[in-house]
Length: 182
Image (cartoon, rainbow, N blue to C red; front, top):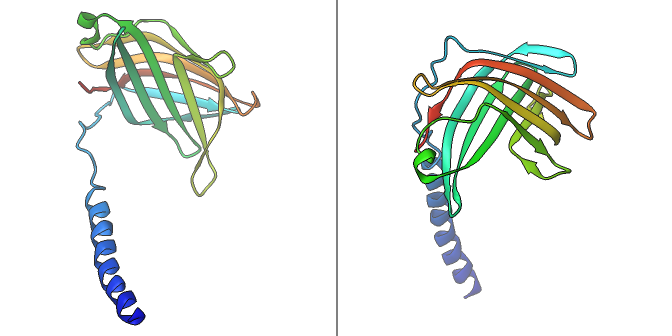
């Protein structure tokens, strides 16, 4: 009797696990997002005295509606052979009418783990030949110096200190394209 029960469970579990694996594989299709075509973009980064040109892999402006108004986010990821940088900027609050446009304030956005400031987080990852190893950001800033909402381009600078202020980095981005999510 015990053998019959375990065989029945095995016959039930294997098809269920197969279905789960197939569903997971089917759900891993790429999300259709607009392609970034950014021929005028120039982005550089320096981490621990190593300077590289960076390629923009993602750049998205999106919004979050809150009870007290809305907040806009700009998230950019850029890579080189040596490191990867992720810039996350939070701007707001905005009134309901102003949340719908793509503008951002021309200013410096600051992140500080110690002071709990969240405006301009820069996260760096160092290529260790197998994968990118992310560092823990202590403090960072992103300064927006230019934005063209019609052409969807943004320019500015950034700076960060990570891993107990032992690793530093900075850089510029000029005419970096972005896509807008509603």
